[in-house]
Picture (tube, rainbow, N blue to C red):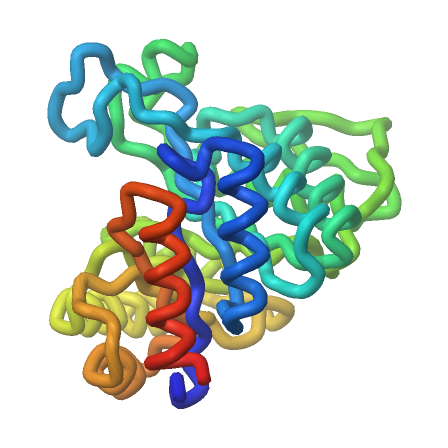
Length: 284
C-alpha cells in the first residue's frame, strides 16, 4: 500500500506513447491499475542539434499537453490529468486558459495545471519570447488566467498581459480553476509556489534533494503571504529512486503527497509491464 501517497505516471505523451492506440491503451491501463494521475511533458520545439541543457534530441516526439489530455479524458473516467509541466511564459495566457478550461469541462474536473518557467534559450528564441523576464511573466499569466476563469467581469492590467471587456465560457468545472502546481528547484520557484500555487512539483529528486527543497518552501512560507483560498501546499515529486516500499517510506516521511513515476519503458508492452508491477507492489 502507498500509505496515503498518490501515485502518478509521467511522460504519458512522449515517444512510443505519441500514438493514438498506444496512448489510449496505457491511459486506460493506468486508471484500471489504480494510478491517481497521468502527467504530460512539454517542449514546443527542441534545439537542433541538441545542445546542453536540452534534455532531449530534436527528433523526440511530444504531443501537445492539452491535446493529449483531451484525448485521454475521452478514454478514461476518473484518473487526474496533469501537465508536468507547461512552460507558461511561452504561451498566450488567454488561449491556454481556454484550452485548459475546455479539458477540465470535458474531463469533468480532472485537470492539474503543472507550470514551469522554462530554461532552454533556443526554445524561447524560436518562439519570440524573452527569457530574461520569464518568472514575472509566469506570475502575471497565472493571475490573468484565474481572472478569466472566475471573475464576473474578467480584467487584468500587467506588464505582459492586459485585457478588459471580454469573457470566456465555459468556465472550468474546478473552482477557482485547475489547481496550479509550480515546478522548480529555486528560491523564485518556491516563492511562486507559496504565493500563487496550490502545489509544488520537484522533478527527479532523491530524498535528500527533496528535503532541501521542502526546507526552501518552508522558508518561503515564512517570508511571503499565502492567500487563504490556496489552502495547504500539496507536494508532488518525481523520485530519483527505485519504485518500492522503501521509496514510499522515504518520501512519505518527508511529507510528500504524490509521487509521479518515470517508467523508463521504450515500448507499450514495457510500459504496461511497469504499470502492472506498480499495481502489484504498491497499489494493491
